[in-house]
Image (tube, rainbow, N blue to C red):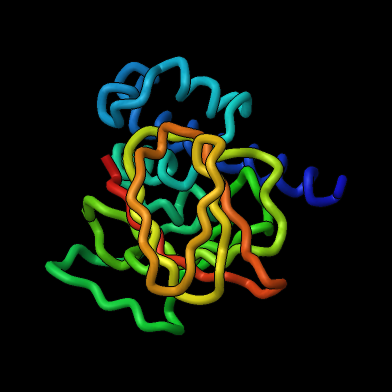
Length: 195
C-alpha cells in the first residue's frame, strides 16, 4: 500500500509541476488561470502546491484553459493532433490515463482525446473490486453509462447498483465513488463537460 501511495504522490507532484510550468510559460498569474477556467485562485494554488488532488474533470478544465491537451498535464508529452471537425478513436487507440488520486485503482481510457478544442470529455473507466479510499467531488455534472459488468456507486451516501445498459446522470459536486461487483471488472462510459 505504501508503494501505491508513494507512486500516487509522485504522480500528483509531477502534474502539479506541469500545470505551474505551462502557466508560467504563458506568463499567466493564478488570477488569469482562475478567470479562464472558472476555478478559484485558491483551489488552483492548492493544486499547484500538491495540497489538493485534481480530478480528471478538473485537469481537463485546466488543460482547456491553458490551451494544451490533458495528456500534456498527465504525462508531460506534447500532443501533435491537429484541430478537426470530427475525430474517430478506434477501440485500440484509446489513450490511457490514471486519476492521480487513485493511482492504478481505476483505469481511464480517453475516447475523445483526438478532438482538439472539444467541449466534452469522455472516458471508458474500468473499476476494480475495491472502493477507492477517497471520494470524488468536483464542479459540474457527469453522465455514467454502464457498459460491462455490474458496479456499485456511492453517491452522496446512497448506494446505487448499475448493470449493463443502465445510465445515471448526476451533479458531481456531491461525494461519489464506485467499484465493480461480482469479482469482475466493470466498465462504464463517463461523459462530462470541460467547462
